[in-house]
Image (cartoon, rainbow, N blue to C red; front, side, top):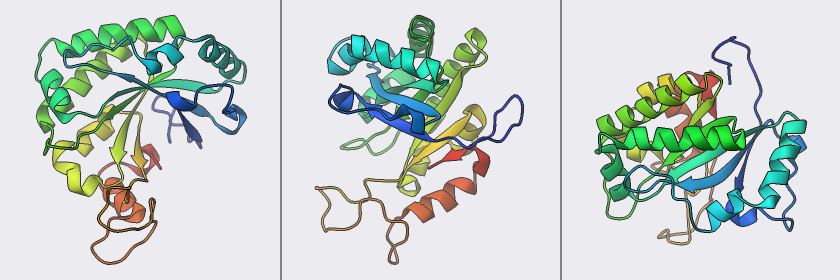
Length: 232
C-alpha cells in the first residue's frame, strides 16, 4: 500500500475484528497489526447507521473503549467497517439522492466521537439480487468519500471486494473505486461454503480449470487497480 499524500510505500498488516469475537475471551494481538478493522456497523435503506443490535453494543462497550486506547498508544490504526449485505437495501439507498449526505453525516460524527482512523466499505449482495446499480453505487461511494475527506483529509478509506469478483464485476466499477479509495481489500475466502454443491478449499490459491481462485482474483483486480493499492 502506498500513502496517497507522501508516496511512501508501506507494508500493512490488517486484521478484522468481528463483533462476535470482540470480548475478553478472544485476545486481540494488536501488536502484530498496523491496522485493525472493526466489523462492523450496518447501513439501513435510508443510508443511516443502525445504532442498535449486538454490533452497535460492542462498539459502545467498555471493552471497545479500552481497545481503542491500547491501539492509540501503539499507533495501530483503527477503521470502522460500514456494511450491508442485502442487495435490495443497497440498491434502495444508492438510489436515494439524499442518502449519501445522511451516511456522511453519521460517519463524520462517529469518526470525531471515537477517533476513528479509517472507514472500510463492505457492500455485498446475494440471494435474489442479481446485481447492484454500478453507476449509482460508484456515485454514492464517491459522494460519501468526498464528504469524509473534506471534514478529515487524513481519513483512510478502503473498499472490500469479493474473492469471486469476476462473477460480480458488472456491479462494481473497479477502475473508479480504485481511484477513490486509498486501497481495496480482496476477500480471499468463501470460495466454498457449507451451501456449496460439492466440497473444496475455502481459500484456494490455485485450482482446476473453470474454478475461481485467489490467484485469479488478484490477477484480475491488479489488471485494473494499481497493485500498490491492493490488500489480500
